[in-house]
Image (tube, helix red, strand yellow):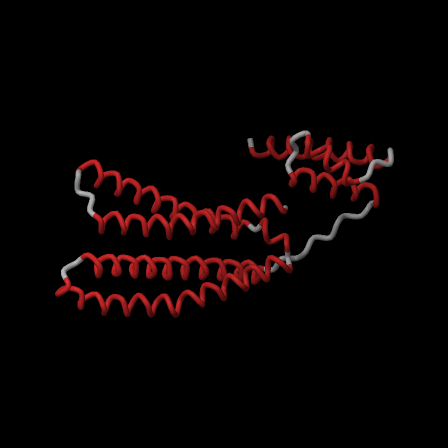
Length: 220
């Protein structure tokens, strides 16, 4: 089955590349050919591969492929893993600070003193980890700017989709948590505020990385 799909894909790319060669011979510009194929529903990946194959046949030389060393993949994995781990730490700390603020405002004033130790711990995590997260993201964006092909990296896509999956589960769980409390009549002001905090943090992270992936598709 896999071999048959591979042969079908090769046949498809060959048909597109043949069209590109004929169109080039007729003097049609490459950007016009690209738009024509795009308008017919072909993906950017298929068109790019077909152009590569067509040009290789025209000039009789294969396009050189960069030798991506294992160390580069290991570095990329390291950067993305650390960025997402630090993301989870500082976002959890930020949410905890929000919870502490809600408890401080709503709880008995005599109980407020016990929240300060928790506040100090979460502030320390936020102050230390958030700049580290920004540093890793700066390095990642710098690498993407230097090597645009890394936008198509499997490591980047897999880890980003895992982050989207986790944040989506948190948002769904928060909404279920809120609706359950509402239907059972146990919804309080403190509960409502905490639910909003979780929704804002997790929802913002989900939207940011989703837009990042969509920007990648548009610019690729």
